[in-house]
Length: 113
Image (tube, rainbow, N blue to C red; front, side, top):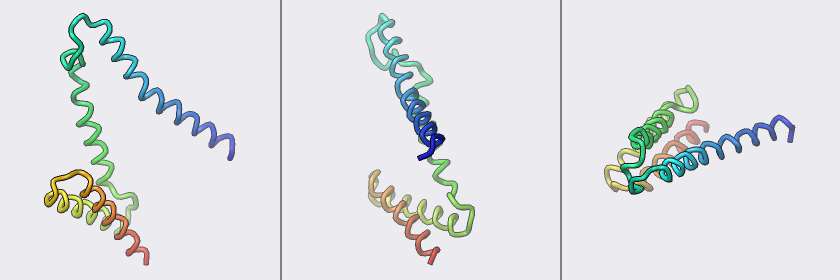
């Protein structure tokens, strides 16, 4: 592999490590400085909004097709519809994702034939 690729892998590794470690270290220090009992009240209020915001961001990215073609839009639409229909019937998390991904992949495979 080229040196540029190794540098990109190393930068990605360090970035991922810092994204996971820095909040952990920050909260550890915050909790240890807090004289109150460690619990939900000790957490900053903006932290409770972070999870739903990340889920909304992932949803937004998932609704944009990877290919700006008719096949890409059709696959995205059928994947979303399959996910919603399966969720409505099962009210679970696993099956709708599996069915949606399968519908998306099958549509792209069939459109390439």
